[in-house]
Length: 375
Image (cartoon, rainbow, N blue to C red; front, side, top):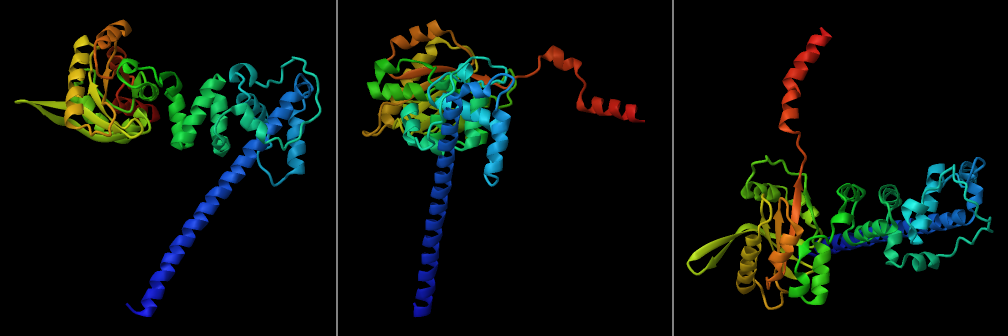
């Protein structure tokens, strides 16, 4: 290789490395700026909450404060009247108060709170102390915080989503979707026997990962659909399916073959969970839960542990997804099983009742009627 070519290759390697360093620095700078803003907003909110009497009743100073701050800092965005209300919500949320009860700063509020002297804006440690969460929360964009303040009812709920944003790097679109699908009230709600069949730490983690019900509204299934139809559509929409399952699931296949003696068996869906370090078998049922489903899953897990599980893997977990279930019946069915099994329901997209649907015009009928009106 000529010296000229060697220099050229070396230059391109240097350029590539420099670009990586610059992008890394840009990302860190953006994060630092966002962190500083969240700290500032939180402290402003704290000062407003501490001087509540100024911002209540008919003579509240919110609008005047917004004007004065914009006049003093014309190059800074974010000092709108609307945002100032959010600053106080932000402080009360991070201080562990109920968003529903304490975050509403309304102009008609009349509660008298003694006026206090403004606190210094350099109390950064107070956020960390009040929140009790990872310092990374300051890296969550302001738009995400506004969504949480608007869409959640309690501080516990808001902080749950906040932690999910940090762990999963959710965009605002994904956060909106998870809020709409009420992840907070579904996460960790599957009926399981994990405590009896998994080590304590593994059982706790597994319970938090599986939810009930699972929302498959992205599917378009007819009422008479069979398990194979559900399975096929879930794998065709694997990205949405994995998002609904949650972080850590790696798709291993559908209709995975297992041979036991002279017979062949097939798993509906097989996953491997990175954090749990185990195989996860999903059995799909488009009917109500039946106790024999648990026995079949117990059998599947025994075979998977024997044929697929490696020595370093944790015990495999089974999840039965069914159209509906009776809680007591599920608990009895799982009580005698020696393999970790969970049972959850799934919901599909809502369709119009046939009677109502038959009374509505088709697209063609609507277009024909519209054209008549326009003539």
